[in-house]
Length: 116
Length: 115
Image (cartoon, rainbow over all chains, first blue to last red; front, side):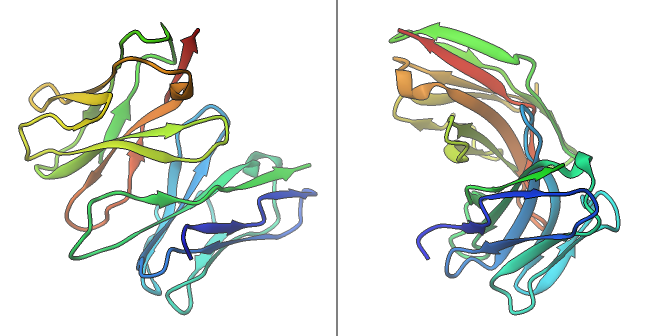
């Protein structure tokens, strides 16, 4: 697609429920990143993939958070047993690697998660 | 590990004037990128300008320019002829060039443009 697409744009859930957030990258972008942004703060790195391989998950806050990208394209970030502190904007970003890589990440519009 | 610090939570400027946003960073890498991203009220993340650390010449994009001081690990953003549409949160960020190109962001500076 023309840009990074994330769904849902808004998600309200009750504490204890599981949520799945989806990211559809720009065509040809093999690197995919997940970030979390609290209100008034900068984005914080969660995890990233090159193709289908998860390269770094050091930013995932605990084992309730997981991410996958099984076919090297669409990625899903899953939060199990949600807690109120999980409320934030979750952003996906993608990038080229190799020739043509400029360091720039292209961000989606984010999924705003509210846990009641 | 890389860190980025933006010491100005809020800045304001009169329309058509010039404003400078500050950013300092820390890294042990010799090759890295530096970025300024803009986040308007729509909450998108838009790249404003980028700089490769190995380039001595300061990057410029129209009304936006940077003052890159590598030894001081400083990367400030100057906005000339400020316009109402420049009002946004501005985030400074850095990433290494080799290996994981994950961005590390600062806390942001909220810029207000006064008409």
